Every structure is written in structure tokens, then in C-alpha cells.
Image 1: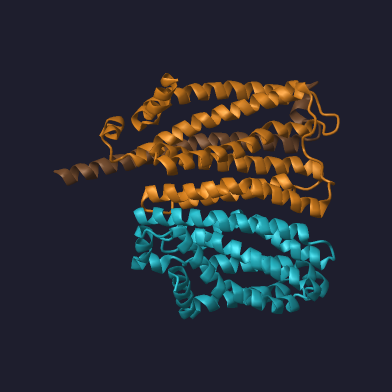
Image 2 (image 1 turned 45 degrees about the horizontal axis):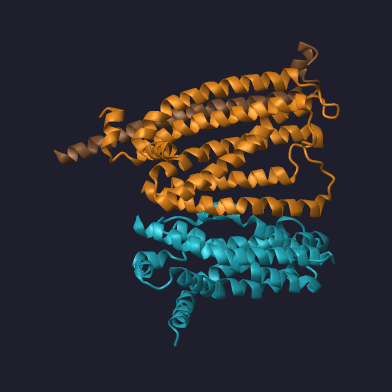
Length: 222
Length: 58
Length: 246
């Protein structure tokens, strides 16, 4: 078997074994979404308007907080050191690790999001656009979150810090993502927003692994 | 400006113009003070480092 | 050519920088003072009243230079971060670390003066106008850089981690600007006109003088702060003993 596929599988297994890490973001995601109708109003017309924003901000926070400790264990156990010293590509390793983590943490959020759509009386006909947006957006957000995790890997407490570092960087993803769903719900053309989101997706996936591996080397060399 | 009075009141915009310039001036002066504070604290820290390394040597 | 290269090479050596930065900083400070005083006189007294905005437009003379500096300083910060990461130059990290608080301060001034300008023009202190919103996000980016830079026990780790963030931010700033622009046209149409349009020469020259003044002011303070930062980073070197006299 190709060593990279084996690596991906073992990462997948590792993430899965730590079910707490998988479940916490999911529970966070659902609970936070339930707070908005309680805090504002149960009126469907209002909820429909805020639904994309709520879901997207919620997804963003769940992703960043869930990813905060992505590399911590590898760092403490010295696995990271082996990765950095090994001749094979650190970027590719990082890429596969993030994707495997995305599969076990973000994918469940996306699968869960139709429930939130119902709670927030978001029109079901716009669901497809929301899901496509979330699919593109969560991958991009996961890479940014991994960058935050890599930058702060040697710090013990970093949850808040990661959020402060990355929320401003991630605003364009939030804007295009939430607005694609908002436009679709308003029976307008969501395509431009989705294309822009896709551009950001490729930009993030293409450039951020490099930044992550540089950040990991920085923490290792210290 | 046609008169000193107009300068002071800025037409009817004095309440906006003067706080804006005041805030700008205050921040610029405060930056100078902060740079001064940073210099002082760094000098103290650096002296401490030197002191510590000298004690280690002897 | 070789003379220029020699100059930069010597400037990049920390003890040399420490020595040179003092007279340079002092000169910048005086130039900044003169330019800002001239700019204030020109902007607050000589420049004519605007036929639409009355005297309210004069906030421009502090708002526009601050907003310009907030971007310029970010560029300087990202460029020095890049130099630091690639050539492992401590002086570059010192300049980046020295720039961040100054850039954040300029951004804060731009935000506050922008809202003070907005009140008479828009009728409210805060509008989610594209420019103010980008400026706000820029402010958050500065805060992130400063926080990350100071989070580590080892200054070098902090410097390099923050440098990576600065580079990501530098790529991100234009994207943020574009996305905020896009978002704004979606919600407001083009009902909000830009704050500055065509501008008469009699109003323009004080603005340019103020901008130059702000540049020299930044030059002065960034040299001053970078002196402290480089000292801190080179505390293990012999030359610092002579400089601080210990």
C-alpha cells in the first residue's frame, strides 16, 4: 500500500479513537445554534434572515476551537520532530492530517447542519447551496485553524489566542460563504459568491500547508 | 477660515473636528510615552541578563 | 552601487544600527514636527471650506494620513517579517515588532476619526462602510500579531510565529478589502458615497504635507522602538554591554 495512504488511514484512525475531540465540536455547534432563537425571537421571518450567518459563524468557531490542539500531541510525543527530520514532504503530511481531521470533525457538522436549517426555518430549497458552501468553507477554515494550531503548538493554553489570530484572516470566507446561502434563500443567484468562495478554497489549500509546515519548524527549532 | 470664531466652532462641526484632532494628537503623544516606557523596561531587562550571565561566569 | 550595498550591510549589523538610529531618529522627529505643524496650519486654517461638507471635511487631515499609515505600516511589517524569515535577520524582526503597536495605533486613530467624520455625514457614528470595516479587521490583525509575538517565552519563536502570521495577513488584507467591498455593494447598493472625491489643490497640499509628516513621525518612533527591540534580542552579545554600560 502507498505509504501516504497508510499515513492518511492511521491519522483517520487516531482522530477517530479520540472520540471526545470529534463529539465536542459537534455538540458545541448544535448547542450554540439553539441559543439564537432563544436569545432573539422564535419568529420564522427573523430566523430565516439570520440563519446563514448563525450557521457560518457557528461552524467557524467550532472548527477553530476544535482544531486548536491538532498538533499538540504530536509535538509533545516527539512525532512532529520525526516528521520534520524525515526526508518525505512535511507539507503533504500536514495536508493529509488536516484532511483526515476534517473528515472526522467537520464532515459531521455538515451532515448535522440540515437540522439547524429546520430549527432556523431556513428555506429547504437553498439547502444545496448552503451545503456546497459549507463543504468548501470548512476545508478552507480547517487549514486556517491548523495554521493557528501550528503557530501556537508550544503554548499550553491557546484556544482564545487561535480564535483572535484567525477570525480576522477568515472573514472573507465567512462573507462569501454566508452570503451564498443568503442569496440562495432570497431567490437570487448565489453563483458569484460560490465561485469566490471556491477561489478562496483553492488559495487556502494551495498556500496554507506551506505556512503550516514553516510554523511547525519554527516551534520545533525553538 | 474667515474668522477666529469660525476656526473655534468649525462651522457647526467643532464637536466632531476637535475631538478627532484631539484623539489623533493624544495617540501620537501617547505612542512617544509608550516607546519611552518600552526603552526603560528593555534596558532594565538587558542589564538583568548581563548581571545574571556575569554571576554565572564567576 | 557597492557603496549602497555597503551602507545597507552595515546598517543591518545591530550595533551599527543602534549607533546610527539615534541621530536619524532625532532628525526624523524634527522633520515630522515641522511638517505636521505646517500641515495643521494649512488644513485647519488656510484650506477653504468645502461647499458640501462645510468645515467637517477637515477631519480628513488626520483621518486619511492615519488610514494610509495603517496600511503602510502593515506593509513594512510584512516585508520585514519576510526578510526575517528568509535571512534570519534579528534586526528585521525588531523592526516588525516595533512597527506593530504603531500600526495598531494609526488604525485606532483612523477608526475613531472615521466615525467622528461619519456622524455629521451619515448621521451615525458607525456605518458598516467598506473602508471602516476593512480598517477594523486590519486592527484585529495587528492585535493578533502583537499578542502572538509576546506569547512565547523564547522571543525568537514569538518573532518567527508572528512573522508567518504577518505574511498570511499581508496576503489576506487585499482579499478582506475586496470581500468587504463586495459585501457592501450587496447590502447598500451604492448609496454611500466615498468620503473623498475630487479634491482641490488648495485642500490637497495640506493633506500631502500631513501624510509626509506622519511618515516621518512613524520613522522616528519605529527607529526608537526598534532600538529597544534589537537590544532585547541581542542581550547575549558583547556589544550590548558597552551600550547599556553594564
